[in-house]
Length: 232
Image 1 (cartoon, rainbow, N blue to C red):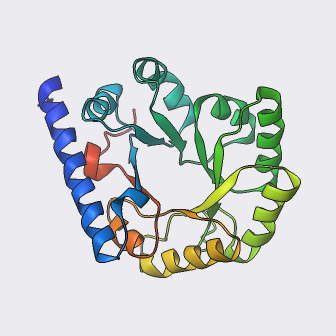
Image 2: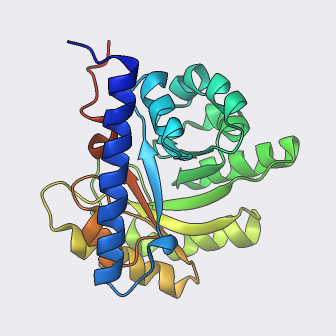
């Protein structure tokens, strides 16, 4: 049975309130302020109604995985809520660099020199410079995107010093069968030695742990919007 729009809005609003309360509690336990942590609500796979429910509850920061999905879902939402902010948290194909820059405010998945150069070229053409996070493949998983930990320093230097990209932090997705704290600690150390102040780490199952290790951005989808519907 599908939810009515009003029931759907109440559900998302309640979930947002619960996640926000848990973020605040985790921050307090870590001796931090909740104001330091940005909740990125991940709407991947959910329709615009779910996002509208979050907007109605006052939330404005969203993460999406696919450029094509966002292009179909967010133009009307942004028109009615021009203050919303969009983070790309999925892999970005080089040939979609321009479209991504036209849509997203933050690119969290900068992961290879070819993409960095494409973004730099398109940013110059568009006169638009979204903030970037370098995605680190902290578990060095062959099937997963991201820069290897031992190559991250050189890649950050390339992006910042040679290409002039606004790299403000690092992002990771730990292996599902390993203790996430080890990966969060690694990301924190890499960021520290590169003078980066932002850490995007932690999802629905482990964001409280990520906050303990210094996360400034947590990417939460299921705990807010519920289980994603199967892709058609």
